[in-house]
Length: 399
Image (cartoon, rainbow, N blue to C red; front, side):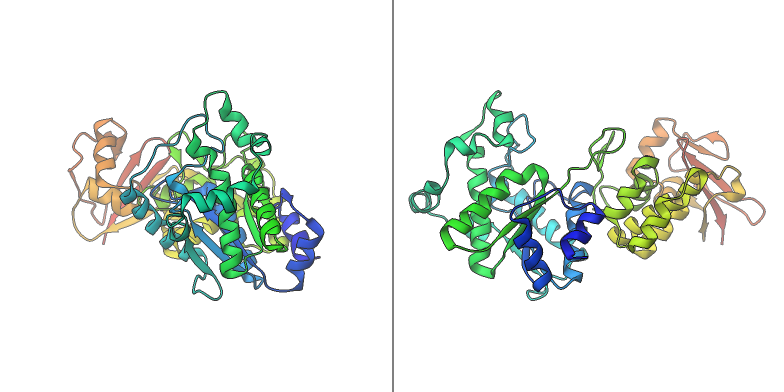
């Protein structure tokens, strides 16, 4: 089975340009490929993660990923999937977000300049001269064709700004620049980026006669119809300060049973045989597959130690009821409730603990907590059980 076929079997491929050329090139030897991430937030989120895992798998096969942080394009704003103009970020915000994205991408990929490359399109987009760019690049694009793109058609009814209209041209120019600088031959993106990717492929082929290709990944929705990586509380972030490892583990463990097979296939590095075995589990046994999914994902994003701690901290969510069965955290000395909850990973911060106590959502040994700074003082004879809401609980014991 060729590399593209293997990717298709795991569910990564939605559309490709020039499919036979692409399949032959990937099987023939290492190629450079890129995926772009516009730093419009302080962290990457689960919505980005499928493509990051795909990049890592292609790197394992010997191909060279180019991770592009869109410090330039984020100043314009991608209209794809939007019903209104994106909020314009300050240069300082973009710089901070870009730095955070770079740190996160380096956790998943080897970006040493040889096995993998990290770039920021601000390096070339901010230096463009407007008239030469229009003359050399802008004339390659048909306005009539651009307006048929779904990204633009959706916005025309509400109003499409001129700055957003330029986004497709700039993304296409990124591909041309990466082809010229590094010999990049493949762009990968979500299927909502198909029009932008095709524009880049056409531009490189027209201006450089280069054999380049595009590939899109599917846009995932859950069996319940929600966008993958979205919850009632918002996005599921890869930054542990924005979505704690505990909550991250919970997100994956609590996915719809019907989604488990495809999530194991798309979001883990497990062998095909293990994915098939876990996907075949039914009924109560499916909890084992969900636990593997949650552990694999939390380990990938936050590390082994955080994954173990998150699984232990989520013990109450997998059926523990009696205090003796709850995950246990050992305290060396009497500890304030806020500190204990943060240490156990039940809350992201002491501030969150205070808010939950104020809202009446915390109990200590069955009694509603009213003082967020009360001391927990377990003894060798009696542990202290703290519950947060209906699904989170931890047992504090003495050292």
